[in-house]
Length: 113
Length: 115
Image (cartoon, chains in turn red, orange):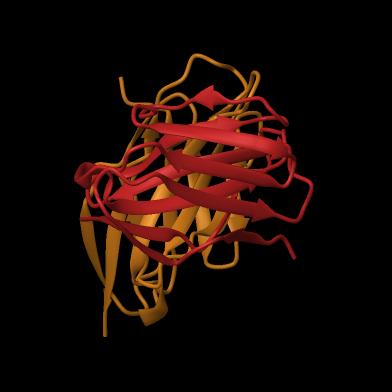
């Protein structure tokens, strides 16, 4: 069974803090993705990666950075958290093939106060 | 322009009835895949069904079928014999060919099954 895990289900941080969200997949997938999900806006892509050390900006990369040093791990970094980054963050992974679906982690609900 | 459009923010269906959730897409790539995901209130995203752009037949998976109309660029999800457990958010997504294979998601449809 494919498994995508995220380091925390719930996280509360203060404005200005540096925040790390970790995602690990165990199926040797090339692609990994970070989304944020907000009511009425669906899933918006922040960054994705198709190989180690490779990254591509998604639709809303501002205020975020990512790191992929190992194939199985994709980290999302909020350099200086702000209240408008309060959201649900979903990580996903997939093989590099059009017909292959994404597998999602359970999500991290981040609250920035 | 939106790559994926879901125009129904909320839908209601009577238990045991069928329901259609609409999805239209926009791409000029001849090779693409279309996906539907379910997100119950617990939050996990569950893959339901896939349709490839070159597939001649509509995809089916149990009670789920995808009504694929290529000329209209629509990929509607049909759920037959609705059950209470079908109450959830449903997302349509598209994956185009090319490097990276980015996925594009719609804004979702909230389905409520009424007993």
